[in-house]
Amino acid sequence: MKVGYKQLLDAARKEIEAIAATEAIAKQGDANTVFVDLRDIRELLREGLIPGAFHAPRGMLEFWIDPESPYHKDIFASGKSFVFYCASGWRSALATQVAKRMGLAPVCHIEGGFTAWREAGGAIEKKEEKPKSA
Image 1 (tube, helix red, strand yellow):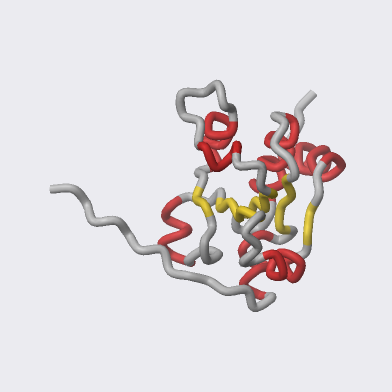
Image 2 (tube, rainbow, N blue to C red; image 1 turned 180 degrees about the horizontal axis):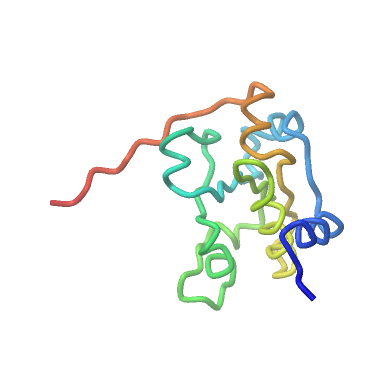
């Protein structure tokens, strides 16, 4: 039996917390909250990101969360709250489910993602492309 993305999303949504963009906007600037942008770097360069967000490419998330991984990032052991987001809330829903299963808490995601954030009037900063090495 095939399990498609819709079934995966439905299952994730039953296990995770989703917050509205307006609620996420109210959390911006909270020193105990880390916004985690899961989008591809090209999306960040094209559309910008939530000011102060930590960029964690979706493909590396599990490795960056796990303290036993050689790729672990200390931010995920900070004890802070995490708000994940992507463009529309699909990748972030699945990522939130995985992060929660891995023991990262508290963690939620923005329903509707960066698109909802932008439509709700959330602040956006431009992502500058790093100069290429010579």
